[in-house]
Image (tube, rainbow, N blue to C red):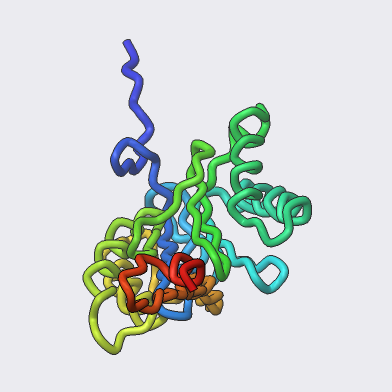
Amino acid sequence: MFRRVARHTSFIAGIQSRHTTILSVRKGDKVVLIGDRQVTLGERIVAKSSACKLRKINDDVVIGFAGSTADAIALMEKLENKLGEFPNQLTRAAVELAKDWRTDRALRRLEASLIVCSGEATLEIDGQGNVITPEEDGIVAIGSGGTFAKAAARALIDVEGYDAERIARKAMRIATEIDVFSNEHWDVEILTCKPAKPADTTTTTTTTTTTPKVEGGAETASEAAKSA
């Protein structure tokens, strides 16, 4: 009699974790994307420690991926095509990619998650085809070390004198010391955040006309004119 042994896989909150750490921090006039370089086969074998997991599209969009490299590259190519259809509309392009991911049978089998950053927005596209925007702190992370990196970045986000790059590097150091599937060799991409549109400062001037007081008991200027 044979007993089936379940294959061991790492899970966090019910979602399969990817063996890496990718972190994005947005603060001030910078958005930083940082990722480690380790490639792991299964649960025990470190295959490579110098793989770049960040890609840049058109010099204004950067992508970090976790999961299967081939699947991630396929998704990035499709996202690049969507950005060609919807230039300067990162959110729209990501949503269209997610639609294809959910409806295309081939795409539904892809095992990858992405963080996509531009000067205007940061998005996470998870392994189920969901497009997720970060919370107000502007921090998002994926991979097996993502939980540690995100927690560390949140603790540092309000520290005076820490810009986005310094927060990202410090948080990555903490995460990679804890997560055995991530290493201390990182790639970093930095974009400049576009300033928010200025608020409408148009003021409305109200002119008040004061009716002069007319002697002789007349109630209004017109009545005074008639009486004259």
